[in-house]
Image 1 (spheres, one colour):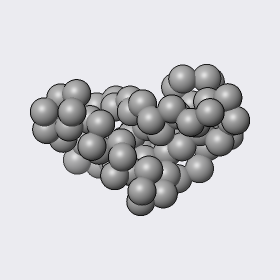
Image 2: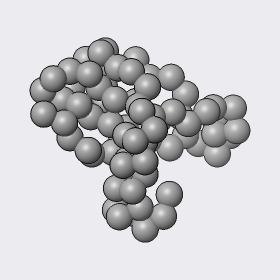
Image 3: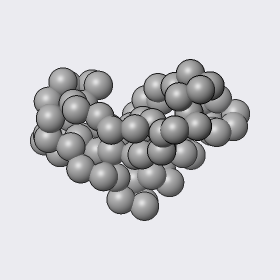
Image 4: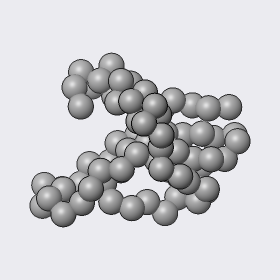
Length: 74
C-alpha cells in the first residue's frame, strides 16, 4: 500500500544554506511514505524503519503537488 503523504522538515535559516533538499521513499510494503528532508535521513518518519531509497522523479513531483495543495506554495 502506497501513501502519497508528504512530510517536510525545514531546517533553521543558517542550516539551509549548508544542506541539500532530498526526497525519499520508504520501501516497506505497509508504508511507502514519500517525504522531503534537508540533508540525510536515517529512518522513515512514519514507520521508523530504515528501508529507504531516493524518490523517483514521478514520486517527487507527486509530493510537490500535494505540498502545494496543502500549503499553497512550495
